[in-house]
Image 1 (cartoon, helix red, strand yellow):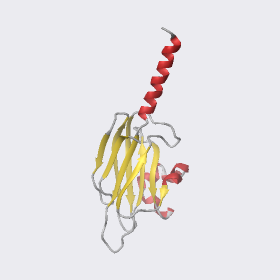
Image 2 (cartoon, helix red, strand yellow):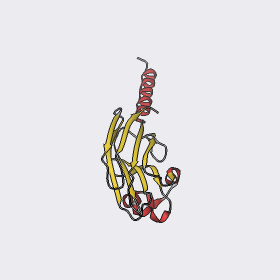
Image 3 (cartoon, helix red, strand yellow):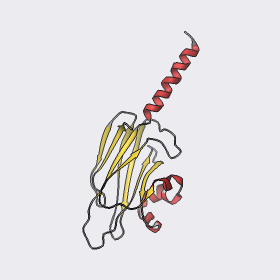
Image 4 (tube, one colour):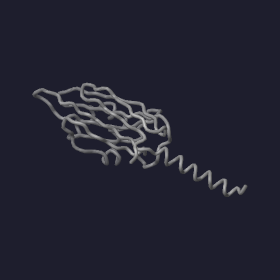
Length: 167
């Protein structure tokens, strides 16, 4: 058997595996309507960590004033206080109550495809004159389509995460 042919097949299979591992993820975040005279739109951060608890990608940051970002304590300690181009790239205005769909291409902040395996999706919300909520779900990349649900919390409604989404 030709060694070059075997090497070529191995390279093609390796490339195929790498492309297969890079699967799209959809995160549907719901912000509940909260009644009261002092309602302010929540600041929301969505990010992904690897199985060692290291932030691999910021997915979204909805905010208005930078002074309130540190109220999203977990996000702030993990990645927010360090700033960076990846945070600027996903920043936007706060949102009204409703459902919002976010897409993640399965790549890290440097644009590298992540290996198949376990990751965690984190969503944190904080509201002026309100409370703070932080939720997370462990997901598996590279194992095909799966759906995960995070139950509602004080500042966040139900959250749905779908892996293996076709772009």
